[in-house]
Each structure stands twice: as structure tokens, then as C-alpha cells.
Image 1 (spheres, one colour):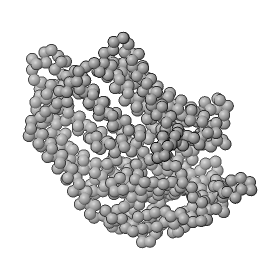
Image 2 (image 1 turned 135 degrees about the horizontal axis):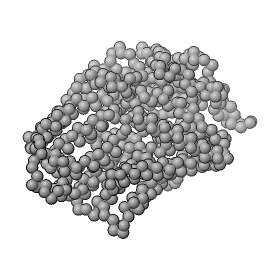
Image 3 (image 1 turned 180 degrees about the vertical axis):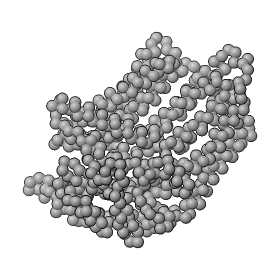
Length: 538
């Protein structure tokens, strides 16, 4: 379970707190009074119905259900509902064993630590994105209102704040407050249990913690915005201090750490204040009851469990390996922008995009023909991008075998992401599929999805494609669609299609006069600057 979740804990800072949750659960479990102490008459109580047999009647079906679930996971390792299903199976096994050992009192002693573990499981992706984007919008709106009240110039474009000559302020995932919100829930629930709050008081404490986290995040976002407005925005993404190869985090990240520290300190103070008294009783004063983590079943069932789990791992790998043997390796696709007549600029990839896509490597660039550029200053020979002339942008990401999260890519479409920057979608109409532009390269066909956006009278045409490392012979290679649906997930499982890795290219051309012109320029770009290299090998 923790191995499955650690993939997200490693790649997404929003859930990095997951690593401490198992240890907090263990602490809550061993510090809770054992079920034998919950009733003085526990030894004289009669056995409950089915007690001693629940591990077979309930636990065994749960254990057997792990086989189909793990096979589904093979094709959908990024599916967050798989995490909840694994948690459910684990919970059923633990609760059935607890019931056999001590009935409802034994279940009661393990229930809260078990539920507390849910805080380490990532939310369903669609819910996660909607809530984060909603927070980004609210924070951006509040910051703009405050800036205007203070007499500064500001305009909101999606979740980006335009502060005139000082540039743009992006309210990204970190500044949305989602990380502080989730951290506050973990802290308040743990402290509520640590100090023995009642159910109602715990609920109120969680709400108070969420409010504290959101207020501190607003203060953080406002402080960073004011630094930008005062003309010192360049220091936000620079290391606070560097000595040789040792580098402190950027000011932007450092302020985030300070925010989390003050959230923790404030919630700890509120918990102590709510508990009251000079001598505080808490779980810390309880002895460690190591017997609480002892769950025993008959040895034949233990042997069966080990053998069954081993069979599931090797059987799943054999199932997918047999299907993948039918796939052929495709040549690697790449974009080459090496031309003295073109100026290329590297773009910073936000932590939000990195965390959500968890690619192996990626780069973001923009380029423009030098004859379309403008002097940096009057009479200067140094040239800079001309935003009113035609230019290209590209985002290229690669995934190794087993890492290309096609379902995630299908949800991170231009239609979902670009409106957050203030762009308005023209084509395709909302709810309709994007037009497919097919371009031949060597003996292959590359299919691009086509989108058109506008902002302040300027147009932006976006094209994206996904090129897998492997595919069935003569199959149609398209960008993942429907992968996020249940039907798409099950179909991938039935066909034995694991995520085999690949490359995603998102291209955007600005300031062209028509969609057909944009398509013609895309075709020229693919012909001149795309390459299909040597075949990729397993």
C-alpha cells in the first residue's frame, strides 16, 4: 500500500506529507488504550456472532479480490481510485482480524488510526484539480482587490495578475493554499486525538485549522505580490543564499516553508489553549501498548496470504509481458530548433505541472524569427521577442516505460488549462472533440489535436500529439482520450496495455491570420524540424 502511494508522495509536493502519516498512525495505535481496558468485564463477555470466523467469511473474499484489482492497476497505475480500493481491502482485512480477536472493542481501538491513514491518499484527480483551480481563482481575486485598494495597478486574467510594467504574477498550485489546507487537516486531526478532544470539538478544530491555513496562504501570496509590485520580482526565483554547490531554496519556496511553520505553531497553540489546565493529559503520557499492533490468524491462512500475494505480483507481470510482446518499438520523436536565424528562449516549468505530470524529463521553449523581433531599446542591437508578431512555443515531455500517465494527459488538455491564464477558447466548441490534423513524416502519420484561443484580439493556435514508445502494428496513434473514463480503464486492462512510455509535444503559434495558416505552418514545422530517430528498444 505504502509502496503504491510513495509514487505520488515522491512526485507531488502536495502529498509529500504522506511519508509521516504511517508513523503517526502507528503512534496513535500503540498509544491508545488496548481493548482489554475498555471494559472491566471484557474477559467474561460471551463471543460475538461469527467471532473467530470473520477472517474467512470477510477477510478471504477481500484477499481474493486483490487479484483483479492488481491486474487493473497494471494498466492504470496512475488511477487514484486504485489507492482507495487497496485501502479498502487492507481495512477489511484489519477490521476482520480485529473483530475475531476482541469484537467491537478491538475494532474501536484501531478505527481512528486506520481512518487517519486516509489523509495520505491523493484525492481523485478531477476533484483535486477542480478544488485547486477554485482556490487559485479565489486567492487571485482577493489579492487583486487588495492591490487595487492600496492604489496599485492590477488586472486579473484567469489566475494570472497583470500588474502593468512590473509584469505578471501567477498564482500557481503552491500559492493556491491547497498544501497548507491539507497539512492543517493532518495537524488538527492528530492534535485532536493527541489531546483527547471530543468529536464535536475535533470537527470545530479542523474547521479552525483550515481557516488558519487559508489566511496564512493569503498573507504569503500578498507578500510575494507586493515584492513583485515594488520591482523586486527577480529575487523571488533566486536562491536565498549559495555557497559553492550548496544552495538554499528560492525566496518563493522559503516563504512557503515559513508559512507551514507558522501554521503548525498556531494550531499547536490553539490546541493547547483549547485543552486548558496546567497539567495536560495527552497520549504522550500513556504507556506504549505494543499489543495493539498484534493481529494473528491461523498459520494456514498466513501461508495462503503470502502465497496468494506472490502469485498476484508474478501473474500480473506475466499477463502484461505476454501482451506487450505483440507491440513494436517506434522511433523516438523529437523537435530540433537549431538555426542562427531563430532566437530560442528556455521557459521555466512550474512545480504544479511537474507534480501533476511527473514526467521523466521535459523542456519548455519559445522561439521567433530574428527578422520579426524588436530592439530592446531604441538604437540597441540587442533584440527581444515581439509579442505582436508570429512566434512559437513548445512543451515537450518524455516518460520512460511504465510512467506515461495517459489518463493524466487526457485531463490536462489545453481546454482545461489555458483558460486559467485568461485565454478564451474559440475552437473546438465547449464539449466537442478537437479537430485532428494528420501529418506524414517518413512512413509514419502524426496526429495532432487542434485548438484555437484568443485574448485581447490576438490568436493562439495550439497543437498537441502523443507519441508512444511502443504500439500495435498498423495501429492509429492518437493523443490519449477517454483514458480517464471507467470504460477506457477497463479496456486498457482487457487489452493488456500498460503505460509503455512516450513523448508528448504541445505546440502553440501566436499571431497568425487564420486557422489554415496555422496548420500550414505546423506542417512546415513537422517537415523541417521534426525527426524520427532510431527505434526504441525495451
